Length: 199
Image 1 (cartoon, rainbow, N blue to C red):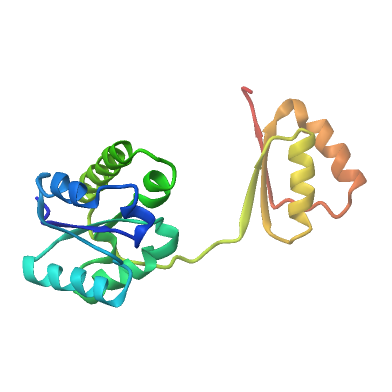
Image 2: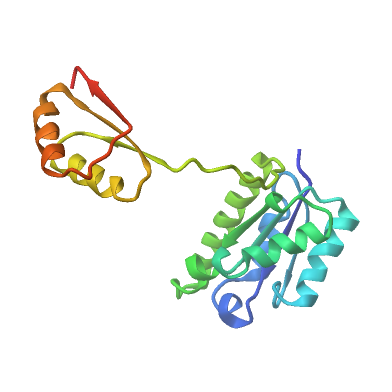
């Protein structure tokens, strides 16, 4: 079982004005696998990041959940933070309680309940996460067009202008349409053609 730390951000008053942050911490700290839970005014700040790093080291955390703003804002920041503390950056989940709770609800009770649900979901996700490594793969520039109708032929013609390796698959009934089009458009080049039967 993972040893998870939960960090709930106030985002100044952006979250704390509508979500009872202390109640979220209390509800999430009793979830299975959670060994540490706290809140802080700005988790993305240097001092907030230090809280996360210190907890990872002190409690031997294997997973982190941050209840804060959208991952678009600070996911990269928090991934770097947990990685700097020795944790795999993919053992982090962010529960977006700002855009999905505090900004859309006026009732504190409703917003708080929803924040707890999102936090529980992120905790459940971290329980299933496994450490990942970033890799690169070579890309083979080729295309497959399925269908020899108007859309398929137009797509194949467009792709053939890019000099990509093109494969075209179509039913036997479209063979004459495709052949007529290829004769009219002499620049049409297709490295492989598959005639499929049965559809």
